[in-house]
Length: 432
Ligand SMILES: *Cc1c(COP(=O)(O)O)cnc(C)c1O
Image 1 (tube, helix red, strand yellow):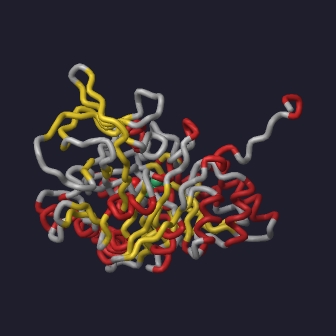
Image 2 (image 1 turned 90 degrees about the horizontal axis):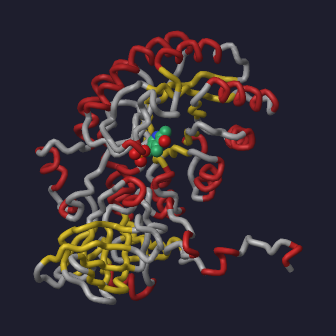
Image 3 (image 1 turned 90 degrees about the vertical axis):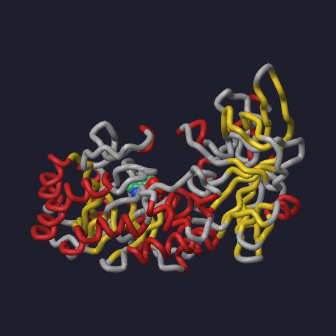
C-alpha cells in the first residue's frame, strides 16, 4: 500500500500534487512518500512483534539521507554492503550498533572502519573473509562479532539476476560446509560467533521459499546456539512487492484484498514464520529493502516527443536508463501513469529515454493514454533500486529527489549540476 493516488485528474503524493513538484523542481524527478516508508516499516515491525527482532533496512535499495533518517527515527537498523554505506548511514543519524555488514568482498579498510564503529555483526560470506576479519580485529585489539551467511540452496522463483540462495550463486557458504566453517572460526580468538544469516533472493512474492529456507536452516541455528551461544538468526530480506497493478495497490483496504488473493503481506509472512522461529529463542533479524522503499517512490518524467513509425508509437521522455535501470537490467515492469489524467482511448506505446541504447526503454507495446509533448508521466514503484543505481551515462545529471510529508515537500537531493559530472577529471599533463 502507498500514498500515490489520483485526486480528480491529478496524481498526488500524500497531500501534494505531483504537477506542482514538477513546476518547482523539474524532471526527471524522484518523489518519495514519508508516510509510505513509515507505514511499511511499522507494518513489518508490528507483524514480527511476537518475536524478539530487529528490522535492518537494506539501504542499498534507497540510501537517500532523508529516507535513512525517517527509518532511523522509527528505530530501524540497517543492512549495509560497503564502508561507504556505513559512513552514509552514520551521517544520516543511524546507529552503527544496529548495522549488519553484508557482502562477499569486504576490504581490510572497510572491516577496520566497521570494527571501529562497532557494527552489530559482520555477515561473513567465506572462510578467507572470517580469517581476514580476525586478523584486522587482532591488529586493533578488538573482538569482531560475526555471523556466517549460509546458502540454503532453495529456489526463490524470482528473476535470475536477483536469486542468491542457490549453489549457482556467489553468495554465502554451502549448507554442507557451514558447520566446519563455524568450528574453525570458533578457534579464532578475535571473533565472536554472534549469529547465523541467510538471504535467498529478492522480489519473492510467495511465503513458501522463505518457509522452506527457514525450515532448512532452523536445526542448524539450534545447534549453533547450543554450541557457540549465538544470539541471532537473520532470515534476510527479499519480500516482494506488487508492481502490477501498482496504482490500485494504494487503496486503503488494499492489504486485505491482497491477502485474499494470496499476495505476500507482512502478516502472512509473519504468520507462517513466527511459529517456526519463536521456539528457537534467538533474536530474529530481517533485512527488507524493496518491501519498505519500493512502492514509496516514483520517477516523474516529461514527454519530449511523440514519434510514430510504421506500427509503433514511441513516447520519448526525459528520463532514461541512467535514471532507472530496472527495465533494462531485470526486465522489470513499472506501471506508467499520466501525472494529469485526460481520459480517451489507449494507444499501444513504447516509453523510451534519450540514451543511445536499444535497451533504454521503460515499457514496450503497452496500452497507454495518449500524451503530447510537455505532458508528464509517472513511473510507479521506483523507490527501490531506482536512484541508487543511477549513473552519469551519456553525461546525464543525476535526477533530483523530493520527499513529501503530508502537505509539505522538500528537495532531499538537488539535481546534479552538469559540470559536477567531470569535476574529478584531469587532463593528462602531456595533453595540456
Ligand atoms: C539486497 C539484500 C537485501 C535486501 O533485498 P530486498 O529484496 O530489497 O529486500 C537483504 N539482505 C541482503 C544480504 C542483501 O544482499
